[in-house]
Image 1 (tube, helix red, strand yellow):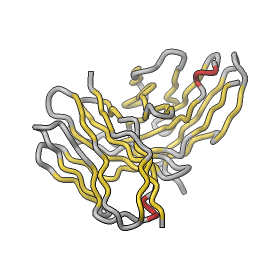
Image 2: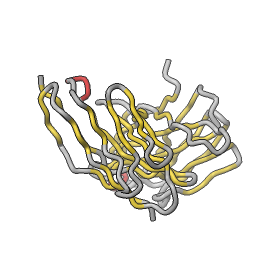
Image 3: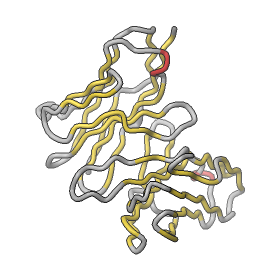
Length: 110
Length: 115
């Protein structure tokens, strides 16, 4: 079946540091790929998405590129802020359902 | 006002009790979902519904049931709660829009503790 593997957290960075959260997937065909963010005490919000190979999703300074050859969708941000502290989930959609990774807790220190 | 609301937000109950979690949405979406979130496991799909007459089991439906009372309401029931159902439960909605990949909008979650 489909699966998503994320780098384990927690990740702690200083403000303005570079962020990478790795995500790889296993799925047949051509899934769509997503990053969701969960701020403390809230539900998940869509951060960015990519629907086909080589697409780059971007939002709020975050980027991720759909790499079919490496089955990856790594999340990056050049300069994180304290307000980026949250849990980040990678997910794929093939057919009717979303399959989520286990989530990566990010803490950004001032 | 929130587009996707869940009640209650927190609930503590005892083993064997029947519990209902409710979800309402004002987004006019056709599709609704129930997930549970456990530490280190991400979100797992329990049930989903693509319209009022359509109910489908997800990855972990055992021990749960659902009811789609109206387009805007989707309830999750635990007929006889057990401690390993202690988790954070999320409702989500999405729009039916052809074959495009549609964003899911999540409620704030219900924290359920079964003693």
